Structures are given as C-alpha cells and as structure tokens.
Amino acid sequence: MEALQRLFFLFLAFSALSTTITAHNITDILSGFPDYSEFNKYLTQTKLADEINSRETITVLALSNGAMSALASKHPLSVIKNALSLLVLLDYYDPSKLHQISKGTTLSTTLYQTTGNAPGNLGFVNITDLQGGKVGFGSAAPGSKLDSSYTKSVKQIPYNISVIEVSAPIVAPGIFTAPAPSPSDVNITGLLEKAGCKTFAGLLLSSGVLKTYQSAADKGLTIFAPNDEAFKAAGVPDLSKLSNAELVSLLEYHASVGYSPKGALKTSKDPISTLATNGANKYDLTVSSAGDDVTLHTGVDSSRVAETVLDSTPLVIFTVDNVLLPTELFGKSPSPAPAPEPVAAPSPSPATTPSPAPASVEAPSPLAASPPAPPMGTPEGAPSDAPAGSENSTADNAAFHAAAPALFTLLVAISASVLGSILMA
Image (tube, rainbow, N blue to C red; front, side, top):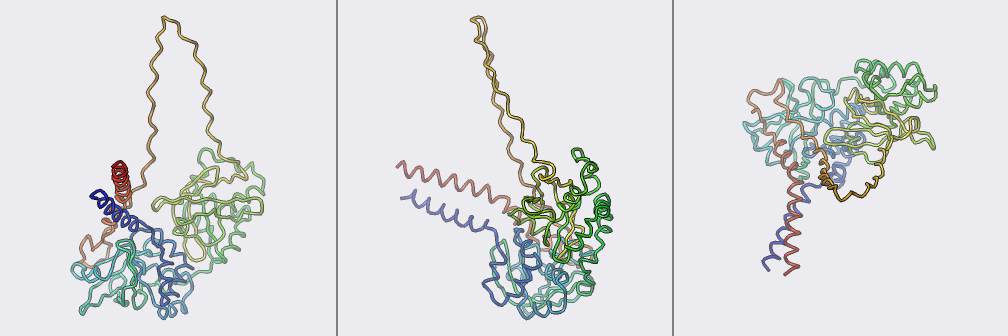
C-alpha cells in the first residue's frame, strides 16, 4: 500500500513537470478570448506569434479589439509589427509581480530590441508601479510618458507565459512617424553591400536575378545572402563553370517565397520552397534550430543564419555563413565510405599467443545545447533608481528549464523502479 502511495505521488509530480515544460501557443491562448481577436490576427500576420511561441519566458501586453483597430487603421503592417513587438516583454510579469517591483520601477527588454530596428534603448519598456494600485508602461527613452496602463489579467502559465491587457500601445520616439519603405523601393544590393555581401550583390546584378527579387518582394520574400567569405571557402564550386541558367537557379535558391523572419524559421517544420522551385525541381530547404540559432540544410551542405540585415514586413534579408548548394545542381552530400570487410586471420600456430582484443571505444555523447545568452545589463538611459537586476527573473527561469530534462529523466527512472518493486511483490 505504501508503495502504491509513493507511485501515486510520483505520478502527480511527473504530470506537473510535463505540464510545466509543455510549449505555449499564443494563438491558441488568445483564440479563447474574442476581445483580442484583432490583436491575435495581427500577431499572426506579422509572424510575431512564431517568435513568441519560440521563447520560453515571455509576457504579452495584449490590446483589446478597440485599441488594436485604432492602431491598425492608421499605420502599415511594418509599423504595426514594430508597435506590437514593443508589447512583448522578454520576462515573466503576472499581476502579482507587477505590484511588487523593487523601488517601484524597472526596465524590461522587448522583442523590438531584438529586431535591430530600435536605436539605443528604444527597445526597452519602463514599468512603474503607480499609487492607487495602477501600473504604467512607457518607453525607456528619457522624457517618455507612461502612456499605457495595466487593465486586467488574461492568462498565465507560470513561469512560462503571461498575457495581460493594457490600455494602449506604448509610444517610443519615432516608432509611428518613421516612413515605411515599399518593398519594391528597398535598395537590396545597397543593403547587401553594407552587410558584407558584395559578391552576392554583384551576382544578382550581373545575372538579372535582382529584378526577380524585386518583383517578388511586394508579396513576401526572405533572402539568405552569403557573405563574401562564404564564396572563398574551401569546397565552393567554381561558379564560372555554371551555365547562365544554372547560376540563375543557384541565386534564386537563396530566396524563399513569403515573409519568414527568424521566429518563423525557428518554428518551421516543413521544407521551405525557394524562388528556384519549379515543378519536379524541388530546390527546397529544411530548417533546424537550437536555442536562438537557426541552420539551413540543402542536402549538400548547411549554413547558419547569421545576421538580420532588414526585417520590414513583408521583406526580410539575412546573411548566412555558407553558400547554399542545392542537390539539383551539385548532387547529394557523399555518404561515408563503408567500413572494409574484416579479413580472416590465419589460425595461430601453437607457439603463437593471440594478442588481446582492443578495448571498445565509447562513442562521444552528443553535444549539449548551447546555454542561454546572459541577461542584458541595464541599458544606457535607465532610471537611476532601477536596480541592476531590475526584477529580471529570466535567469531563474532559464535555470529551471535547463534542469527540467534532468528532473524529468530522474522521475521516470524512480517511477520505473517503484513500479518494478510493486510488480515483484
């Protein structure tokens, strides 16, 4: 009986842990609240939902349908994305934590800070616990007002995701006034040259593929531009030996149809079509991710997505570390050579003592996942009374998630042991 009780409690602990480590889905969460249907729709259109779902610890400041409609009626999608990314905090804040901020004010990093579009500390949000139980939100830029306030709690999955409603968007200097360039007007080659991709930019111009990129950009385009060093790497084929049609296919292979920022790539499970995809010629890419790193696989080689050059809905430009080589042009990567057949040794003579067999070599264990990046320090321009830690629980949450797999394995092992003892009894 005692063993059964122990097994029952282990089952409860196992179930609780399983719930804790389950990934969240912001689209599914908000679908249960009709008051945020417009907000949910724009999170999907801007691909911010993918970025939110790919992170372990996050707070979403949701706008009601009225507030979201007022924002959407005045601005293009690229501006809306910047405004909404400023409402996604890279930390966990539930109502209780909001009212327990040390010294009454703190700064929190947002998704806007990770886009590269936020100069200085404009990607940080000032959270202040006001008198009378109110909590205000504003830009971290000096002199900014607390133009948004906490309204109510929506949903929490401690300490994974918190969704709370706020009264209005947060206004960072220039976030609504900066002109949004049309994708067809973006100087793609100019941006590539500044990003260290002059060789790739030159090939786009000389081959005429640049026009293909520009015509596709308005409907959505994701460009993977190899840097100049990638073309000098060992193993890169001599591109001068390609026919014009083959070179065009290679360059079109470096752009995928549709708008896929990094968050969308991290959650991608299906092969990605490229501009070179045509009927029987797949010319597709597969994606894998580990933490914040995203890797593209071609079947011949692979390459890390390095930097974001431009993220302006519906156009995004990345640099990649290697030239992407499609199997349609360069064949599949060679398989490892098979081990030679063992040769039967002659029977030893009576005077010969056979040598002892060599000890087996244990295969190395797989590499561990990269540890999370260290938390960012207090940005320049932060309030002088904000503590260095600034109520940031990200480190604690990261430590918990890092330990979860080990705890999970331990619980399974203990459960199996207890169950075995019961069955043997």
